[in-house]
Image 1: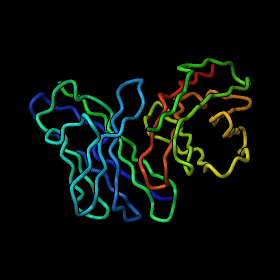
Image 2: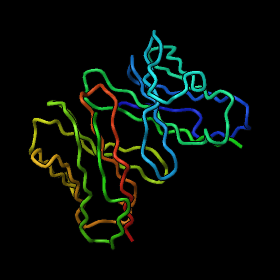
Image 3: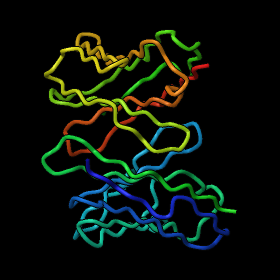
Length: 115
Length: 113
């Protein structure tokens, strides 16, 4: 089946620094990818839709300047958390729909801890 | 607006018991898709099933079964003869098309001991 990878799987950074998370579709092309955020013991909340070749679409309440999304190619989307703060600590998950399929494939997630 | 409600926050059962996880959804779309995902402690979401709004046939896959009732807007998930490995958080989700974003319920944590 289709595979989506995320890198890194875990990252610890200091307040004020920026962290980049990569989401790759390994064996299929994804013109669209989705970024979700999950707080401990909470549900997944959609942050933004990443579109290859155009700007990302952010959900209401998500700061565009803080969560920079770049869909550099048909297999790669990146989420950069800029000037991270402890409240940004969370589990970030990306997903990509496979063209012609109704299924979304999720990455394994990235656990971000900001100290 | 779409909404998914999983009223059960946490369920604890003893091995071999049957357990049903409830899911109620709201949508104005006539075409929509319902999903169940399993999230073990590792965090990775595991796809379990997808059902479209035109297919009300119940489905059974091994110890798993799903009951889709459009009349009550429910898509419940039953695990028969539960096992310790079934312990995880289970999410019900809804999308208006196969390519759109998913609206997730809050999840039900299942503990099998």
